[in-house]
Length: 460
Image (cartoon, rainbow, N blue to C red; front, side):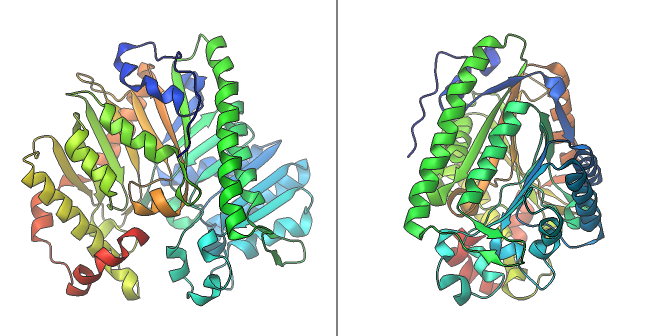
């Protein structure tokens, strides 16, 4: 486990946040004004913002996503971006997942090849492949199923000094009627932090070349695991030390950003550590509103919520009708049922421990929409607005903790304006939420799902 040497003498000034002073010892802190944060609620606005930022960038564009879709909206975005990259001769970096980004004849990789055709020296197109699939395993497992093993799951969209943190992929589904979260932060240091992270992961990934081939990573599985841990750990520690100086010099900040990285494959567990401790640190009578597109709590998170957390909890998840796997062919079609079964078992633990007054389960259902939002909002005792949030790509489940690469951020603020905007975001998501404990108990689950969910729980 990684140990960071953050200066614990740094502290949140307001008493309402003293419970979370330990954060300064876990991750670098980026202090700024709340006016530098833009909270987007609507997926179409997310798309419009990406188009505007990539069109107007002047120095760099850097993207981390699971994949880039191949529809008209994505192609329009890429065309606008390519024109800007070529005209302004700026750096363009993209890292996607290899398995997902090369699925099908027309795919993310084939679309991005156009950038290498016109500006190869300015572009770095990388495809991450989990070391679990190095060697013969990559070809032994069929397409789609090999994606279960581990993915590049970070969602970062950077244009110059703007960082858009999200759980949304760069795909038309996520631009229209799939609800996610999108928080834009304008800060040059934070943008540098995430750009350097993308570049670091790219070093250990496959490279797309001008001639259309894919160049394999030169690192063995053992080398990759060892060196990725070292490189990412050094990256975090470097920025932690640098930000201590900035934190002391900046007396005007009202908001503090703590970037969190989770790469369980490489023993980088910041997000897991912070999420668990946030749940443990929340004082009595505070509120924690959690959300996840896919309900599959790790045992550690579930036990923390039931045994160690003192705050009041609501947990919002996708109703089966709002699950992105609804109607999928083959075994994937059973995934919504599996999530409901897992949620039902957790609800039974709530009942058994007589905590229905403290812990509430909710489901999001909106006609024609799917739900992919994730994160956490922290409301201090007596407050009608949140003072903190977790936002990014990580769900609260096994995949995020153990298999995938995730990028998240903890945001705390004393700005009333930002607190109200966070509350508005949270409230908008909950408009389509209903309590589901009793319904979960009565919901039917196919026999084959009940028989297999335990075996494959860590894969979805």
